[in-house]
Image (cartoon, rainbow, N blue to C red):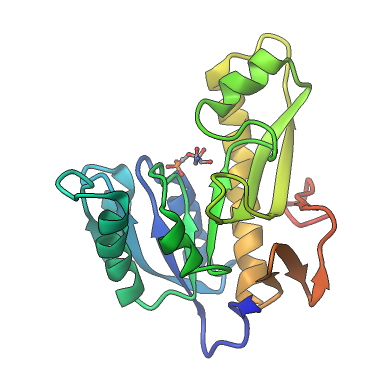
Length: 226
Ligand code: GAR
């Protein structure tokens, strides 16, 4: 069993981000507002110019980047990158727009302690350009998922999802914007449940309050799980 429950003190989160960092900002704002009982122990990026890093610095947080260029292998990069992440002693590692594939060894060493937010209703539309994939497939509904990270890219056990309609006339940008407004409350609610020690990973199963989850939790209109 791997769990983030039973720890002493507030949930310590390390955020991994490659870009704009709106999910990171949602976390920081919720902590500031007192609606998420957690602390961000550090923000880490593979892109030195990621806006997410600036958001972290503006908030007075530890912010660090490491370029993959120059490393001999994915494993060598991951070893160096995650040594920095581990140094801030996170209870939970949150991939929030971290666009680099993480090697199996680094993932397995942190099983049950690393989650990712992905802009689709997994298992649909893994990988990149998920909004385009959804439009091309002609689905009526799209959304976002938070899942445990496993070596299977975007294939780890799904904890929770938020759904949005696909509307007539949607283009990629319109659909992405609609999904993003639901990503932030989705991620925050998952983090609240982690902070309360309610979510854990057992083998390939998500446990909530000690019981195996048969279907992903669904975010309701009130931003809680239905
Ligand atoms: C979010 O839409 C997130 O779901 C997606 O990147 C965006 C990051 O936005 N993640 C992936 O596509 C991971 N495969 P943000 O930097 O504003 O939080």
